[in-house]
Length: 109
Length: 115
Image (cartoon, rainbow over all chains, first blue to last red; front, side, top):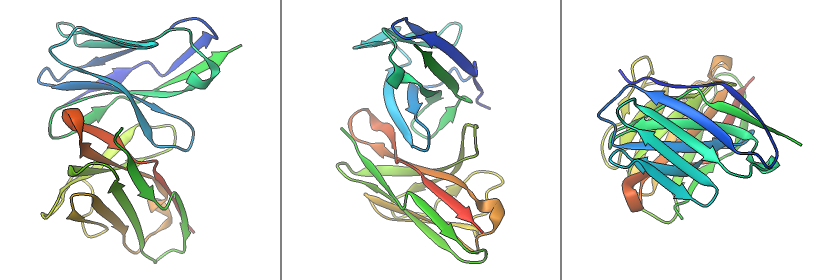
């Protein structure tokens, strides 16, 4: 079955870069996603990458995919207090997604 | 962008009553909708997958008679928690797949509290 793992906590100083890492096991995944969840809210799609891509950049967000090692990372440049949230890595195909446990990012002044 | 609306956002009900949660894709047609449950400080657990006009596919361990799913149109799916009990209290989130890239977009979630 699918298994997605990510570290549970990350503390970062405001203005620094944040890097959240994720590993997955299903090599047949078509898409890999990063979602953001703020307290009491649903999931907001931040970005996604197709499995045949190595990197995707979207403003302050950079996604790196190492398909050989099944490793996905999300880098947030110039981290702001509004970036404090839980970030979920997910992998999937046309049928369903599997989520990691979520990384709680805390931005300190 | 793709917007998924979920209502209500919070509901409190008495034990034994039924609660209906709606999930709508507002600006795209959703070929498939998904229902998840999230326990505090945990990840999302997929409950069921529904396609318009057909029966939902439930994940192992999810009672289909307890959690009734109806996907009446390409923009609306409903989850009814029947005869709710305190252990059903949770955060329920729907998602809809469609739009550009066939991506899953999530609703804001419904917090259910059963007294």
